[in-house]
Amino acid sequence: MADSFLLNGEELREPLLYRGCGLDGIYLLNGYALEEHDGERHVSISDVDGLHLAIGRHLVTYRKGLSPKEIRFLRNTMGITQAEMAARLGNNSQSVARWEKGECEIPGTSEKLLRAVFLASLIRPEDLCALKDLLQSRLDALDNRDETQTLPAQFELFDKWEESQAA
Image 1 (cartoon, helix red, strand yellow):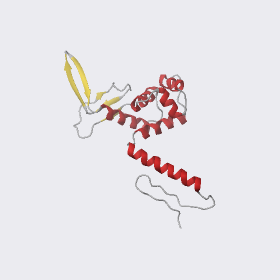
Image 2 (spheres, rainbow, N blue to C red):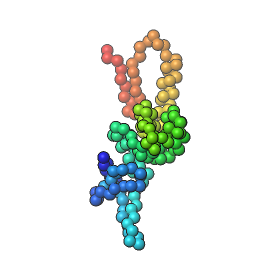
Image 3 (cartoon, helix red, strand yellow):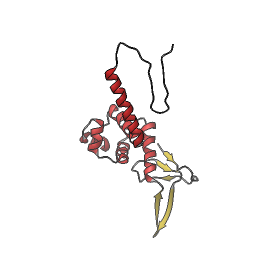
Image 4 (tube, rainbow, N blue to C red):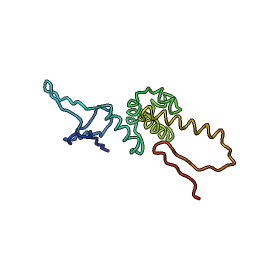
């Protein structure tokens, strides 16, 4: 399956197969420059880090099952080792190595958690602090809650939406 990416604000160009990420079927519709030196064609990419984040976001939100190359790509894009990824997913580094080599499939729960961990890595630090504070306050409230009392559900993370029980 081929996936195409473009850099906002630039004109579309001839699709270029992007091999620098280690994935198959990634095409750039712009955001690259072609140069020739000593008869060899060289490609330079504008904002490689941003491109890799966009590819990763696409993988975790639109791909049904992650391939070994995609698992490795996500880990590398997050800038973590196999051991660090294993710790985040509650596994061991040998399991991560086997998933990346295609020796065995990543279990469904680990794959879902990897997707969530990658998306969380995209959150700005200040927003992550707000999420941490919200979760901590909710957990503290749960510890102190009188379970015999029914309260309306509330959600305050992004736009201060609140859901209350129908009267």
